[in-house]
Image (cartoon, rainbow, N blue to C red; front, side, top):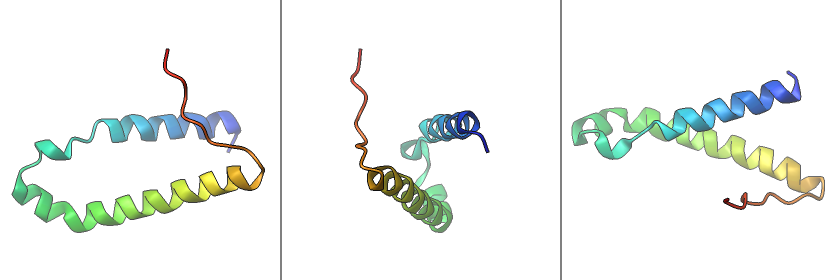
Length: 68
């Protein structure tokens, strides 16, 4: 996968996550989806950590963008 494609896919993932509004879910829906949601969030956390660790291992810092 090219670098540009990887960044495009990461941007799409950010957009998809931005569309998730768990506070709008009913308690029943949240309870029904909690197992799957937990699995997805844990996998996402692990992958984000791996990517960040790989960047840091190259001596670079991950910095929050300065807002305009």
